[in-house]
Image (cartoon, rainbow, N blue to C red; front, side, top):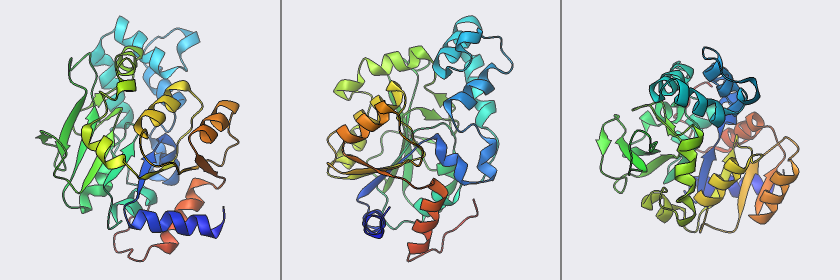
Length: 283
């Protein structure tokens, strides 16, 4: 990664022109956060640790969650998800860097932990838009929450919107995780119905920066594509691992420049360029 690219990204972040898109791999940046499941496979292992699930689907997160939902109860899935993410890990250096940015209109957090919420406690006028399961909230795609966890009507009055399309452990333990959860969303996502209007407005003309994300599965690619729809024509993804054929095709198709650098090193480089680092927390 050249210096010019880093300068471009850092300057755009400072001006609020980039939308950070955080995946489960972000948890690998912080030592304390590593106690939380940081991949679909790791989370599937947590869900199936106390429940008998057929061997052929034990490593498939959405299928395992669906099996538990069918043969135990939806509440069993929710309880297992809460147990997987309830440990009070500290935000990573990346979360704290983002929380300290002077302008941060929108962050997409495509995982279930609450580390962004913990880091954003230092910000003013921010709130959450979280995807909810049709199994529990039929007819509703998104719930809004203020910074204190109380319910809100929408996210139009916040200077920072944290969009969590899969839900989150906090404040209400809403999760999209089973096959049926995603089938419901996927029937509507192409016409953007499950994506909040505020997100659609804020993404217009902005770049996306994918951090801790992989695009190896169709589900990962589909959500990224639909969330970044009608944004700008230039994006970046920190992806030190060699991309799969499908990932490489996805990056090329949507003009996402791959940054071949480990995420902790990328975060360190950003921190070293931060003009105002008053708000910091050890990852």
